[in-house]
Image 1: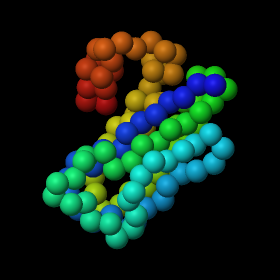
Image 2: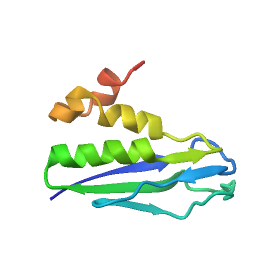
Image 3: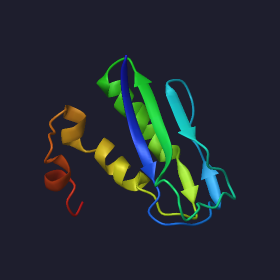
Length: 109
């Protein structure tokens, strides 16, 4: 089994006006947010964590892609779109990444 997890971060305070959390076999969501929840001024920027389990890397990546596609958090700005770009990046999928990945691969993409 292989596990991949991402942290959904909120960039600004606001009220969650709509939400759809992904689910299914091998997908877990850790969160306390709900529709109508207002992120308080002394908030932790991590509003959710998505954890997926797959038999191998490709299956785990596929599940994370689906989870991020299904995720909807309206009313606040999050990093979900950026995480989706990472998880579908060909070099990430192939396992060709290091500490310079974000700077080299994700700049202006």
